[in-house]
Length: 122
Image 1 (tube, rainbow, N blue to C red):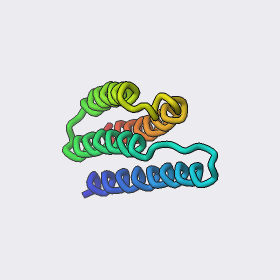
Image 2 (image 1 turned 90 degrees about the horizontal axis):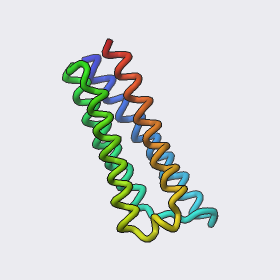
Image 3 (image 1 turned 135 degrees about the vertical axis):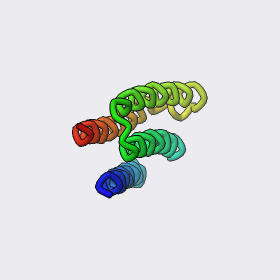
């Protein structure tokens, strides 16, 4: 039961932080500071969401010592997904720095979650 509560809290916190990032993007666009494509942000969000869900499910199943490997695999997958976006989305090339900042913010959130789960696992 405790592991399920940790998983639900983690998922809720991630969704809250993601909503704040989408709100920030919307505010930047409304004030004509920086207009970014929502499709790219949604793709980065969903890849991170799938990664976190997988890590949280493995944590709940009490599989020890593989969370780090799953995390590394998803980091590589997300990096290749960013490369795919860079090649096929013209908009991405125009605003490459803000999109990579967004990528790094989501990666930081993921790293913090993984570190907390690994500490709770021991």
